[in-house]
Image 1 (cartoon, rainbow, N blue to C red):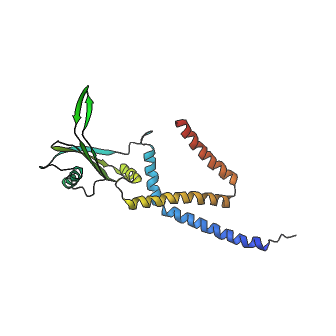
Image 2 (image 1 turned 45 degrees about the vertical axis):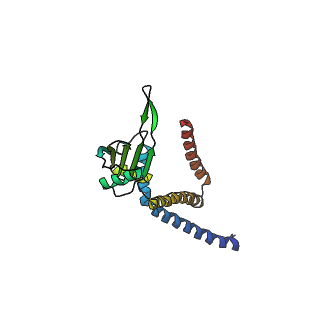
Length: 218
């Protein structure tokens, strides 16, 4: 006795196979798109994850400091100071941040002292940071420089330090790709492996461990 498939089932079966093939190919192509960036963000993510606890000593920023004598007349404002420092040190990018603090009265050993205003200018790139600090009235500006080694360089790329809009949008494609790969991976598991119980067990175990660690740290 033979079991004949209904016409309706025989039509649905090729559609299902075609959909699974499309899903597998799309999953593979999206994974290929993010492979190089995923490796970069994966390595830098491990380094950043260990920056506070279980520190990895590979990430280093070499620091140096100089004091630059200001010209006469001195820069009129923080923006003029930023342009002057940029020209003096041959920095090939605009200041990432310019901040000012007005004069204020502070208490020092029980005495009220008038503290002058402060201007601060920051220049950032993936390989280095330059921070200029000026107390209004001084004849010089203090400049600190930090140079990143290879590992610090890739962690700064991960954080987008000194990078523009194009890098941010490119990193967004990787983040979106990871979300897509997670969803398509779940679908492929259920359709190809069939064990929904195993899938649910793995997923809930991972989620449960994450929630447990977070709750224990609160």
